[in-house]
Length: 132
Image 1 (tube, helix red, strand yellow):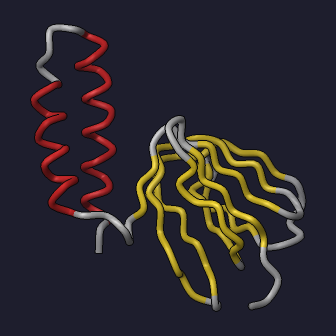
Image 2 (cartoon, rainbow, N blue to C red; image 1 turned 90 degrees about the vertical axis):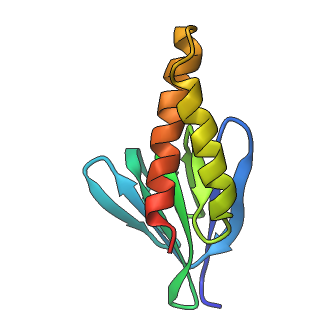
Image 3 (tube, helix red, strand yellow; image 1 turned 180 degrees about the vertical axis):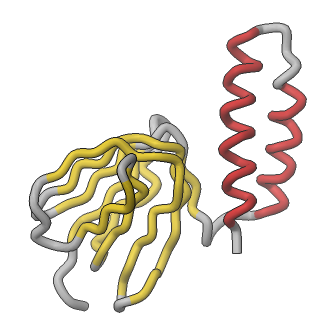
């Protein structure tokens, strides 16, 4: 493998990805940002979208994120996202069941529960639309 940069995708509950990669393309707030090894320092906000991870000169993995921030430097790319889901490792049926539960929670009388359920169901719907 050629030169690599370390990629980390972190959510509040877990480190979803931590691996060396050839290139990463992230959904920046002002457009797509491609990061290669020895990239100059960049910080940016991110929109909801797909992070394409490249190895062996092709997309090896895809991760859906729900916005966040990215820090890119010469040796690493660190993405902090509120929600993230690997698109190539998901079980569609489990996500569909989870989505049904979240939609039911949207009618909860507690506004905190209903608001969080709405945000999570919106994200899961986007994930399901992007599963190949």
